[in-house]
Image 1 (cartoon, helix red, strand yellow):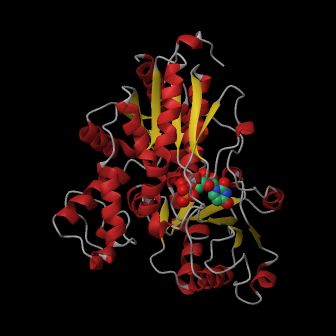
Image 2 (cartoon, protein in one colour):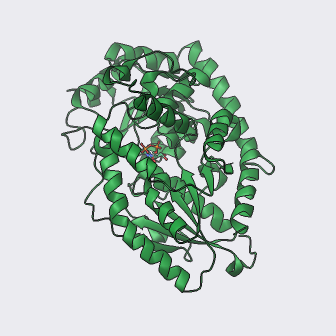
Image 3 (cartoon, helix red, strand yellow):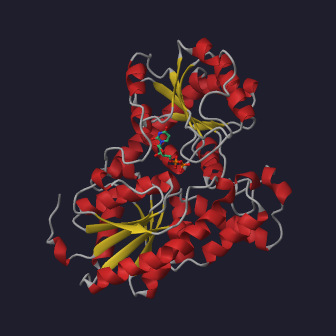
Length: 447
Ligand code: UDP
């Protein structure tokens, strides 16, 4: 650890939302800044809190009273976010006021865009408020495009499936735009939430310049502040698993026994849900493909079921020799494993970054939020994956074979391996992500 007489340095207060895919990169960023010498406080909801024992003993944890019993499913995401923000605001303000009164003169707040109120509180208290967006950079202009179309009355329910390119937003199609599956009321709430955000002093992105250069420029042109692309954080600061799900590490010894690049890994992250029909088509398509697989079926993934009871009869027995199902996989280790040749994913941004970092080609099955945008970049721009257009057993069988067996998959593998090398360069000394990180450190020190 670097020691720069840290007591004179600004204290960095990071706020994190209860979502696994947001909390993980925020805690990784905290670890990165701690290693640079800053003292760190983490403000978090009481719902799904981080575990202090996974972090350095000098981290301070600031619990926020959210009064929320559980994370609701993504169909009511904007309402959930609004309540979370309203409920947490008073205790965040109390924590910051106390920290200031204890003599912490310079505090820089780094806030998750979902916890937008924390930026507002920071600005009210005359503190620097740095926005940390844990989604892809491409998501932000897509969100603005969606908002603009809506204001023009041009984005109606039937457009949610439109394949046409959005004017001025090539390569995105209408169907790729964010929140396609939420109601109009939810969307209005989301835009209202967005409009409440403070103007940030700077923006941090968990991405890499070579990957999203154009979108990063668009973010800069929107906010007119410095934008630091410091990702992928799981490579910049490798750290032990810090999530709250119990990882099933036994799957690694199963992977050890499989041939190289022979296994397709399937996971839809921490929030997406599917219905019984989708589960059935996925299982039957996998069975017909005859390929090896490791499937992370999170309890709660399938609405109305405990875990595996809705799988088609005989599926587990029939695929026992070549398939393994777990509740939660050690995903980074899985993607880094020699036996894994493909990743069938919902295209959450962390999953995309992890797949690219380990050179694994993807089958994209996006659900909501930024996943449609990410899937479009993976399949159409970077050409390192295929998008599953229809969740139907025959289509799934073909997709799995195209990625795992056909020449097409091999060509994508060459491209993604090239990107993997570029990621390595970005995180090395003088690489773009390391330089952005140094820029961020100097920016914080300027306070
Ligand atoms: N993950 C994991 N094991 C699993 C499924 C997911 O460790 O079985 C991790 C994955 O490595 C990633 C995160 O959970 O870091 C999911 O984040 P992402 O942004 O991809 O999706 P979200 O959960 O936010 O929808």
